[in-house]
Image 1 (cartoon, each protein chain N blue to C red):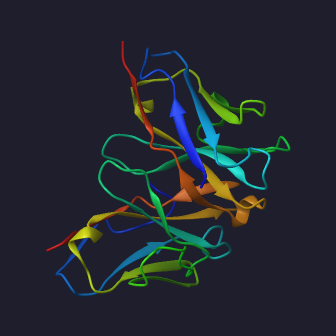
Image 2: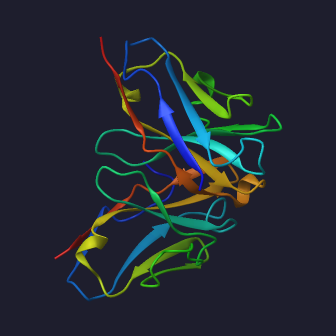
Length: 122
Length: 110
């Protein structure tokens, strides 16, 4: 059973950077799956942020692409999110998730972390 | 404004059947698979339907999915109070080269 666990600061100052990690257990980051970040502002819907494949390929939400970096630490079996120049609009619960399959177009989220709330405030 | 359009809310009585619609375009639903997720309050989303109409192991067969053209639907039969949740459709969008979600539909079991 694959498990994902997010970690990182819960409070970030405006213009700062959200930095989160997702530890993967019960499965390998090197498997034939994509690994993704999704966020959900309080009381609102889900927004896909981006994803990566262990070969180095990445896909990002065009609306966030200029501020987002997703990277991987294969030795620790974890991946990370950096979102820069944040504002209050970036306050959200951030989820990491596995996208089943090696073909991004055909993938779906089959495992999710519990989520971590990040608040952007001074 | 979400790329995929869902009704904000639906409601129905216990033991009845309800459907939730998801409308898109040729660049997403019309050309790619639709997946559905259930999100209970305070919990992460859970995969409910994948590849338009397939049920993951462990998901009740009271849930079913369908797709026609650029629209998809989720049907829930024999409604139970435990089905009260937010439901999201999702698909890959070829124009955006990324994943898109519907705005979510809140189901209330009366």
